Length: 339
Image (spheres, rainbow, N blue to C red):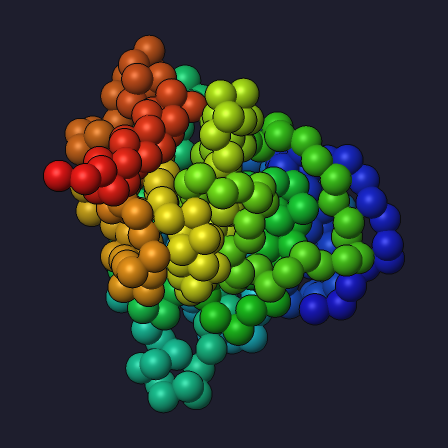
């Protein structure tokens, strides 16, 4: 993947992804985009705005409303030497294409003993807090993480959104980029020349000593806000941005948990069967002897995603994160008290 000329600009996440797609299209004629309403409309969230006008209808393809067809067509194009970037309009619409993704896209490289690569990128806007209706606020990352053969990235800021998109398109493996739609308008600096650390590495984005909060995507700003609130009460929280769901950098997370002695894992998806359980299990295996309390999880409830006027009660917020931290501290305090 070639690096663009150095230019640091303030962008929102949506524009950072747009810039990454534009640079990829400009650098490689085999790269193309496919998805519903991504042409003149520029996508529901305007992430692909202006790209069809610049690169034409054969490079930015408005597809029928058929997710299975979008994924299947992308697989076929990848097998013929193209690098398709497929947009699924909303997270809850991915399931018609789920079979293509998990039984075909994820397995073709292994099925052919490495002879065939399928460099398909799937852009999947996901998560809630946009006041939308059913099927528009899902968090299906655990369903895909369970399937070997898929890389899954979860940017939380514009810089990662740009470089994770570039890395996904350049990868010879299929990659799902989980785009946090509630953060499309989050602004931050983007350096299009200086790539950040490896996109599959977790990152400690706030140092702390009393407990660790590990999260990804849309909840990263919430965790940082929780750490700020805790600091006002004299509590020092470390925040780890997981960044990559598969492969998972459990070493960085475990190292942070061992340092603070406590870990809270947070995501929007339900805690029951959620990806936080995998993180908790791995940290327990790696750092059990250094933990002062069990790993706790904060997430959505085990129920269908609620109507928009109730989603504020469903989604993890600052208070729920801090309550989990306090439970963790209280547990370790009881454990250390004499009988």
